[in-house]
Image (cartoon, rainbow, N blue to C red; front, side, top):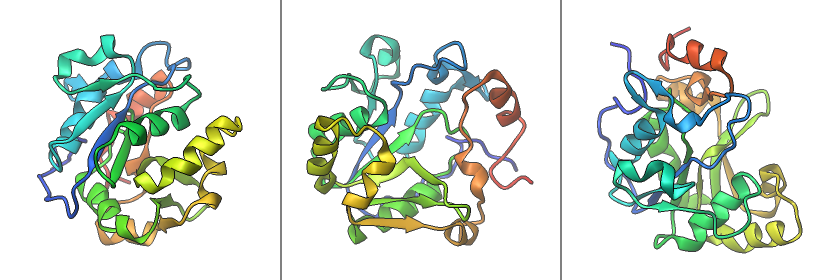
Length: 211
C-alpha cells in the first residue's frame, strides 16, 4: 500500500527531542503559502506535525503565528530577523528545552518516520546529523541540530553568513548516506520538496519507494 507522509506507523523515538516544523518560507515560486497546500486531503503542515507527533509530544512550528494556530501546537516566530532557514534554526535552538532537536521542512510530503528515527539514533555522534546524497547534495532541512550547534549558528548569523552550507564545516557533522536510506527500504524521493505548482502535482502521484 502506498503511503504519504503522516501515514507512517508510529515508531518510538530513541532519544528525548523537540520536533520543529519549518514553515516560515516566502513561497514565491509557488505563489501561495506552501504549508497550507493539500496532499491527500490535508495541509502539508498538518502532515509534518503528525509525523513528528508520532515520535514526540514536543512539537512546535516555526513561522508566523497567525497562520497555523489551528493546528493546536505552539507556533514560534523568529527571534531574530528572518534570513531564511538559519533564522528558524536559531529560533528553535534558542527556545528549545531539549539537547536534541529535529528540524523538518513543511514541504517534504514523502518523508517517512523511519528516516527521522535514524537521524535521532545518530544524534549522539555529532552536533548535527543530516543526509548527504551520493551526488554531494545536502538535505539540511530534515536534520538533527543539537543545542551544541547554537554558538556556531549565532556566530554565523551575526557575521551575515546565512547559508546553511557555511555552518557544517564549523560543527561536528555526521552525514547519512543513500546506503542508509536503502537499508530502510527508502530512496532519495523522501526528500522531494515542493517549490512550484508542477512539483505539487508530481508529488501527489508518488510514494517514497516508487520509481
